[in-house]
Length: 255
Image 1 (tube, rainbow, N blue to C red):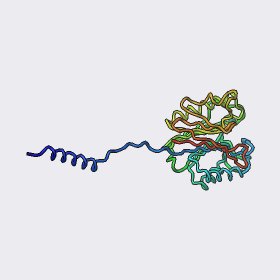
Image 2 (cartoon, helix red, strand yellow):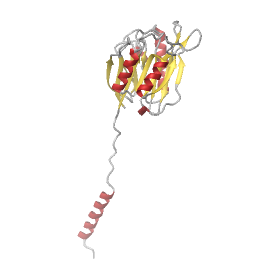
Image 3 (cartoon, one colour):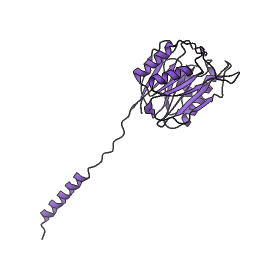
Image 4 (cartoon, rainbow, N blue to C red):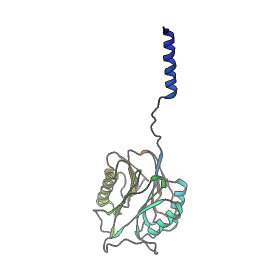
C-alpha cells in the first residue's frame, strides 16, 4: 500500500517540475517611446515669393541634426531647399506646391529655387509613406495664392501640414477645420502642424478648430502642433532659427 506521505511528496515534486518547465508569463505593456514634431517656417521675411535668407535652411538642417525629430513640417519652403535638406539629413520627404490662383500653375520661389509650398520630412523610423493627400482648400482668400494642405499616412501614424491664409479671420478658420477633418479621417494616430495664421484667444480663436480628443501646443503666436490623445504631451520648446521671422516649434510627446 502506498503511504499517504509518499503520495503528497510525489504531488509536490510534480508541481515543482511543472512550475520550472512552464514559468508563469507576466504580460507587460509596451514601453512608451518619445515622438517629437518640429514645425518650421523658412522664409525669413514671410514673403510668399520665398525671398527669405538661405541661412534659415542652414539653421533648419542644423536643428534637425541636433534634435532628430520624428516628423518635420515645413511652411514657405522651396523645392530646391527640400532636395538639399533630405540629402543632408537622410529624412524622407513629401512636398506640395502652393498654387497661383490666377494661372493655376504652382507658385514659385525667387532666384530659381523651384516651386513654393509646404512639406513633411520624416525620420526613417516613422516607416514607409502611403499615398499622400494633397489638395487646395475649399476656402481661399483674395491674395492670389492658392493654399494647399498636405497629409501623409505612414505605416505607424499620419502627419499633416499647411500654411493657412495670412489674412487670418474666417478664411483661416475654415481652412483649419478642413485640415483637422482631413487629419482625423486618416486614423487614430495623427499629428498636424503649421503656420495656421490664428492665435489662442484670438477672433477667431485657434482653439475652436481643435477636434475633440486632440490637444494643441503653440509657439506663443501662429505656429501650432495638434496631436491626437494617443500622443501624450510631454513638453514644447521654441527654438531660434537664424534667418527666419519665425522660431522653430518642437513638441515632445510619448506614444
